[in-house]
Every structure is written in structure tokens, then in C-alpha cells.
Image (cartoon, rainbow, N blue to C red; front, side, top):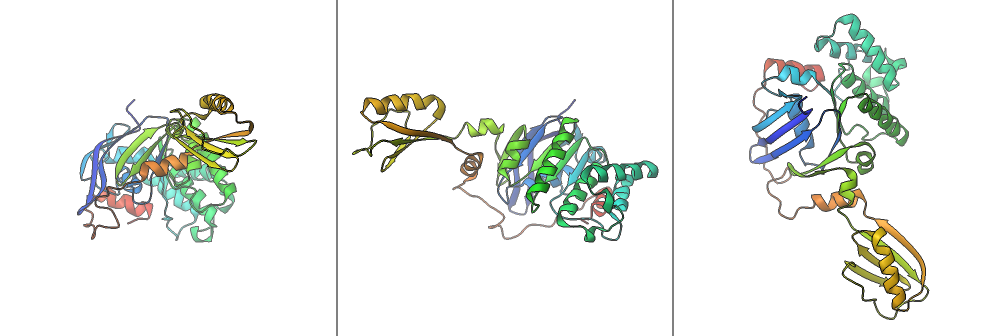
Amino acid sequence: MPPAIETVDLVKEYGELRALQELSLTVEEGEFFGLLGPNGAGKTTFINTLVGLVRKTGGEARVFGYDVEDDYRRARDAIGLAPQEFNVDRFFTIREVLKHKAGYHGVPEDEAADRADEVLKRVGIYDKRDERFDWLSGGMKRRLLLARALVTEPDLLILDEPTAGVDVQLRHDLWELVRELNEEGTTILLTTHYIEEAERLCDRVAIMNEGRKVTVATPDELKQRGTDTIAVRLESAPSVEPELGPYAHETTVSGDRLEVRVDDGGSTAPQLLNDLEAMGHEIADLEITRTSLEEIFVDLTRSEDRTVTRSSADGADEEPPVSREQEREREQEGVA
């Protein structure tokens, strides 16, 4: 089977602004893949390119081997999108919204009704099936967007900031549900600002910045790129800063507390203790702290050589025309 998502040198330009800069990325079938980056990194542009809401300027983009423009219909039918924005037709009940969505993808009416009921039960809002979107709470609206993405039984589920603005309990409920979907074989692409969310859910994460891929790695591999801090409390404050070996990248002393930054705290701690004892220091306590994934993320996306960005660009050209099929799809998704 081809990858669930494969892009090669993908470019999207808005006038002088390059929202995507030769982005090459592969998401394997069945993977739970995270897409991280600050605001303006290009995450939503990337997603909109996959689903046909944005037309690429250059490069290649395929979903399960289908080109997102040349094989638009088959590529789009494979994707379920839960967008960050609320874009639901407010004139229909939420059950009707789901039936219309399924019908647009060729699902017969009776089956569409059954699927609508099934996904509403799965996301926990079946009892609200005859209510309109505006009558739902914020958390229920998030559940509905997920239900709409699932009603077509997609092979690839794209979640764009799915837990933005929801309470802690709902966030954990959604985490449990998307884990189940992934275990059942659905490939998931997740964009999020919550580092904890990516760390808990994702097999791999790609970090983007200013339209570029900074790195792709597992959460554990990313954390290994950081340094650990060994904090030692001594029985008495040292008169001078201890001279340690090359394993110590940075040493700070505050009273009887000594902090040493090292690559691997677990393996380095015994050597540090031996060195301190050899200098005549008595150890009262020791603690090892690992660099968080959030700290590594901030470090990787910190850029001093910034080119044209969303904040500095004078403006963006209008989108080029889209096909009639794409226009109908926009209307169905509520973004026309």
C-alpha cells in the first residue's frame, strides 16, 4: 500500500508569501502522526491542500497514492476532516447534517441515516440528534465536527486543533476515542498546540516552522535531543564552584544547591557524585530533571533568520479558481 500521505517539494505561495516551502513529508498507513508548529507555520495550509480547499503552487501531494488534484475525488473520499473552525450548516439538525455529508460521498440514504446515528452515539451526542448546531455547547460542537468527519468512514482522519478551547474532561474523552480509532486501523493526522497531546497520542511528530519541515521524530527521540539537569544539595555550601569534567555543559551554584546540565542525567549522575565526593563534598540530596518536549519544540522553532512571514507580507493574492467539484465540496463543508 502507498503511504497515507506523501508530499514532495510541496509549495504554496500567496503573492510574495510562501506558506509552504518545498515541504516533503510522508505519513504511513495506520500511523498516528502529529503536526506541530507555531501560529503561521503552515499547518492549516498543508491540510487545506490535502482536502482540496487550497490549490498548490508546486510540488506533489498524494493521499493513499491519489494525487490531490488529478485524482481529487478519490483522494477526498479517503479523508475525514474535523477542522478547527466551526463550519456547520445551521439550518438543519445535526443528524441531517451528517446524513447530507454521507450522501455527498455517495452513501445511500438509509445507510447514511444508520451511519449518522452510529457516529453520534460514538462521540456521545446521540441524544442531541434533533437539535441544531447553534443549540449545542462548545464541547458538543467539537464532538459534532468529529462525528461529521467519521460519518464517511474515512481511511485518513485529519484533526485540526480538535481540543482547542475544551475542558480537561472532554479533552481526555476525545483522546480515548481517537486512540480507539487509530487502533482500529484509521490513519490519523493531528495538529495541536498542546505538546502533551502530541506526546501522549502520536507515533511520530513533524515540527514545522514558516512553511518548512524542521524535523520528524518520535516524541522520545525529540526529548533525547535535549539536556538533563542534575540538582545536588550539599551538606554545606561550597566556597568555590566545583571544577567538573567535560560532561558538565553548565554549572551553577546557589548556596548549598548545585545544578549541572548534562546530556544524560541517569548515566552521568554516578560520575558526578564520585567527583564531588572526591573533592570533599557531602551529598544531602539529588534530583534529575529531563528537558520537556515543549522546551525542545521552542528551541527548534526559534528562528533568527526570518524571511517573508504572514506578519511581514503586504498581502496575499486571491486563490486561483477551483473546479466545480471543489466548489460543491466547499459548500458541503460550509466554507464556501
